[in-house]
Amino acid sequence: MHPLLQLTGVAKTFTMHLQDGIRLPVVAGVEFAVAAGECVTLAGPSGAGKSSVLKMIFGNYRCDAGEILVRHDGERVDVARADPRLILELRRTTIGYVSQFLRAVPRVAAIDVVAEPLVAAGVGRDAARARAGELLARLNVPQRLWPLPPATFSGGEQQRINIARGFLPDLPILLLDEPTASLDAPNRAIVMDLIKEKKARGTAIASIVHDDDVRARTVDRVIDITRFSASVPIPKFAQPCGTL
Amino acid sequence: MSDADAPLLVAEGLTKYYGRQLGCRDVSFSLYEGEVLAVVGESGSGKTTLLQLLSTQLAPSAGRVRYRLRDGVTRDLESLSEAERRFLFRTDWGYVHQDAALGLRMNVSAGANVGERLMAVGWRHYGRIRGTAAQWLDRVEIEPDRIDDPPLVYSGGMRQRLQIARNLVTQPRLVFMDEPTGGLDVSVQARLLDLLRGLVTELGLAAVVVTHDLAVARLLSHRIMVMKGGEVIETGLTDQVLDDPREPYSQLLVSSILPA
Image (cartoon, one colour):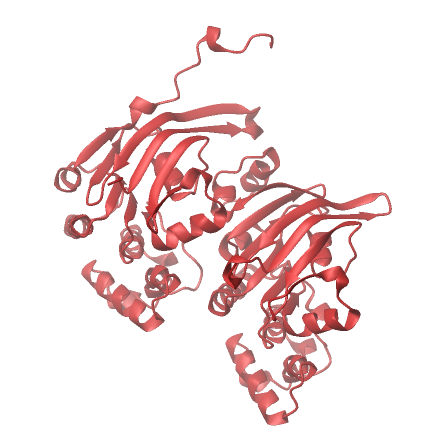
């Protein structure tokens, strides 16, 4: 049985054309796999490329080299080579992502922000709202906030909206970028429960988690991302000759 | 190939010269049902020329546009007769202009502006036309007691919403939009964008949206095409191009946004 998610030789370099074309290598040769029901976490200091790797898996950043294979509809699909339509389909049915920050859409009610992924996947609006409400209640988001657009919510409230939106659909692969960063202890405990429930249902999770407690209680395996660091200066002899 | 797998519109090598002046060169892409494509770039980059070529308002110097009609047959738009083209424009297509005065009849009532499109496709029953027009005004958040006012006395934001109602009342499958939020106040823009976003998703519309506003592109579109000097220089998934732009000009565009 193939893992649900498998990265091989994945590399990312940013070229900053506005800064004299300076090249910022982030990672190279990234290799890891995540099986169904497993939660791995990417570890390393800030700037090591943890978020960039998650963003490449989600198709938000382009992948310069290597393969990002996901099981989608019974087949293995390479996100690194998927066209936009396929990536959008993957996001509807296969890969979920909880980022650190909510990108608020003006005038859309919190409950609809949460329900939207279900609606996009074909669930009726009322049923989707009902399930969104259950999850928001579980995450202690007061019901009076549900009909309001989350733009003016506090950081912790926005993060819980974001978590609800990411956890509501049952997708086989879930990417979590510091999902508990701005939560208090009770809410952190709820998110840990949600993660465990996802694992029990066979979701493959790749995460970035700094909180030791959350790590100890949800993570099965740590992947040291500094092993794949590409930010080592290129030795002189390895540079192409014939240019100045 | 099932309908959902076949593109709705295919542009192949679209090129337009105005005399020796380049409008746009060698633009190719496919647009599928329910897909929103944003065309971004600065003034003079060829965005509006492209929109006019796609919607047959301009004839290309080279290249062609193929469109899958409602009967499932894909035709080269140049091969359509003038009558067929007009019919497309009245039924299956919408065109939202930046300047509402180009898309509306400013001196006739809002209700008639919407109803006119229905009459053009054969509706005759006055009560039903007025009823449907009223429903659409409600959907675009225009108060029912404004139905008899001409858009001349409407605000800019209301005119744009009326234009949208007029375009969507015939349930088109494809809508062209040229800077739909251009020239509006920021708060008015947000409302219009949210409305458009809701309608596009709900109705499963395909759209080509020309804008120089990257926030509009991010909110409305699935895919983005960056144009510069008449050529497409970068294309891809909207959030990918905006969050990880590859070309120097795309990076300049993205980095030129002032933080709020």
